[in-house]
Length: 115
Image (cartoon, rainbow, N blue to C red):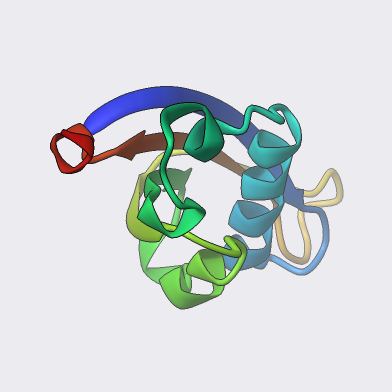
């Protein structure tokens, strides 16, 4: 696979303590940063896109990768969730922390397929 594009995003769950929600918002943040039509540019179908999603949150096991895959309308999505991001305690010290998730979204194609 030839990686052609990398975008970054950050998302939060302010009150619910939902790591999946924070990651989903980070994906949407990254997607909204670009409008490059890579598939058309290289003569591929959008279904041929290989998307690698790297997610960083403090509790990787609390993320539902299937929910994150569903954000993408096409392409073959690989989700890697690792420890990262940030949990910010509430000022009063009670309740769920504010969760910050970071994502790196890489898009590429199997360029050998075009030859």
